Amino acid sequence: MEFKLGNGAAIVLPPLPITVIAILIIFLLVRWSKQLETRRFTVFLYFLISTYIAPIFSFNTKDGVFELWLPLGFLVVFFYLFHSKRNHPSKIKASILGLCIALYQLILQYVG
Image (cartoon, rainbow, N blue to C red):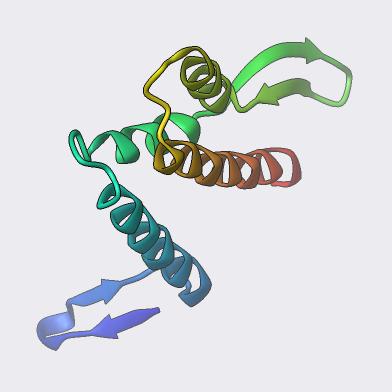
């Protein structure tokens, strides 16, 4: 989506579905952060950490390089929340939302 301004300048936005999803994610994270009494920013940190994916195995073939990717950030956050006594449902929701974004990144990694 492109909005042309005067003097040849333009504002370029991502496609409409991605913009709507980003707005929905921000809305949910703000809503869940309001449920916490203190340290409301941790919901955003759990979400951001949960979106991290990393290659755990790499193998060279004749056709190219095969890499096995894993949502490593979600696993770290999940085990931290599992062993922590301060696991609020909002933090768990934010980390699951981060897992959804990580799975989307995994699909893009293998398909694209």
